[in-house]
Image (cartoon, rainbow, N blue to C red):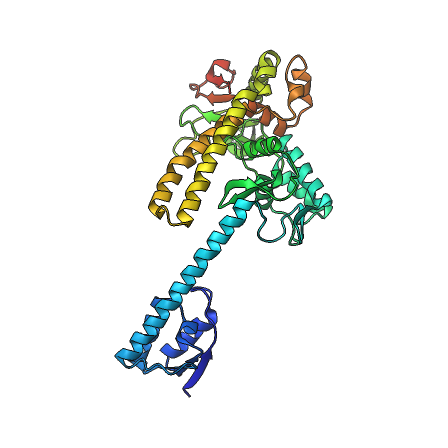
Length: 433
């Protein structure tokens, strides 16, 4: 039996399952009339309205509204429906524009907008620090700056029962976003760009936040989301001398193969020691003993640390200050462009051109800042005590030191029959920040 259905208020396209179900029923002939409060409550999208009109033409769909029936079978009725739909669309766009302006205004004032962030409580006067959660933020910051992996911190928080603001367990990417947010150092952002000093007390200072950003956004930092400890010193650091792509560490392994002897068939066991290999299809030509290369790189790293560790790991405060000043200026330029776009002073195309030119400059300044910041927690590795500190460090810390020193190495291929004796000349090592 064909029937009539009543609809109330619209939702944005793509999030109106009841409306879409109703239109399917119309298309299949289950409905021959739709009752609405007004046409603009049926849809505020001209594209959807044209679909309704098409159904009226094909299936004789009737449209009734509290404000008066609209006969979609006549030109006048369709014109009236389109006019109401256009006005409704205009009102939606105006409302969205006012909302964007309000968000920009709140951002410029440094006011918080949104749900409760981890580390703070919502109060009538704004954000107030949640001391327990703020202590967790500071702890995570210190551990990241000390070189600890996010996966290890995440696992520890989970084991301790520390949850997010929604009560769920921490995920690696959620933890990373929390540590990278400008709110931690008291800065309000808008569309990802810092725009004002926040109306709340910071949990960490600006310099510490810069260190965290430099650490977590460093391209040389290798992500490890598997929740397991790093095993090999030079995995993804050593490069294949043939294809220039990263090599990986391979554990010692044993093969048993069948052999033919004069006395008859037998089993022979071959043991291959730990090694670094090129795993990439189309190459896979380089494989070298891990212990020999690790020993060589260790001796080079300790030599650099003993001789130049204080200078290399100490950073350059002047360059860091200049980079921060330049980043602030570029971000202010982006914020100004965003406000001008919101006020219709510039077009979307002009906004995109400005963004495309300024973003690479900000990236370059962040790279300069990373190289100028001192290496947190590595002071013990600079100077005469470098060897002892290296011996007591875990693999993850040693890898961080190699990154701080800017050490790069290329493992070259050796000819047939020359793999039994290690040749240091076949491993090219460079360093320098």
